[in-house]
Image 1 (cartoon, rainbow, N blue to C red):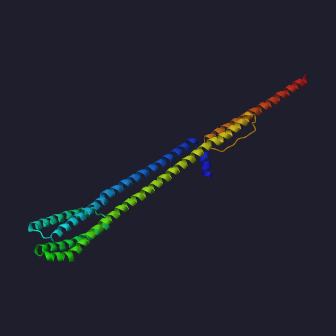
Image 2: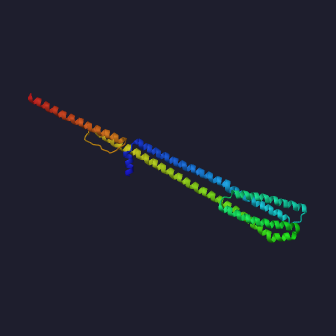
Image 3: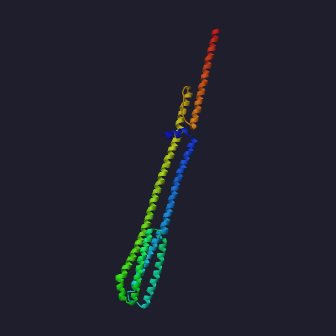
Length: 288
């Protein structure tokens, strides 16, 4: 309360208005900075999801599609086919292996976090075990289809199951990370939005408070000045009006106080002179 009274009484009106303007501008700048920060965070979050998470998931899905296609092709080797068709399927398998290797290269380039790197390492180990089993299967398929079928059912099927399961776990990890990035982005967005609303409300309240103080610093002393001048106008020069202020209203009140004191002095001198004149007239009349 003392601070409010000190601000109201001891600071000039121009200074009050300047302080109020700077506070409002500061609040608006703070809201603007928070807004820009929110936009920057949104851009960073979206760019992160679009450049890191989404491409990794897309490549993971492409990888699982290529693996499933490869599994379907190698299953054809168990059916009765001629040598030309068998050679074509093996060439297609080699081509698919090259495409999968390229997908691995891209995934390793995109993986920057420890979890993704660890999953890719485990996935690479599963792939190597699968490729070793597949090479054995291809040799058996060329030499003895029955042994190839037995090897496929007892060994290769288990390895390719582990391989595809590891790919799916890797994709699930990437989806989890993308969801985490989105959740973090939304949490930051809501926090920033709440901060902006709180600061805006605080700015409105503070502006209203400063405006109320400025208005009262003008209207209250002005009302007292008007009442005092009304008493002076009615001829009451004995009333004294004191209010300790350092602003423009204080200067006005001091000037009015000086005017009232000078008017009181003039009236007092006039009253004394009138009494002297009246006394002199009485003496003259007595002498006659």
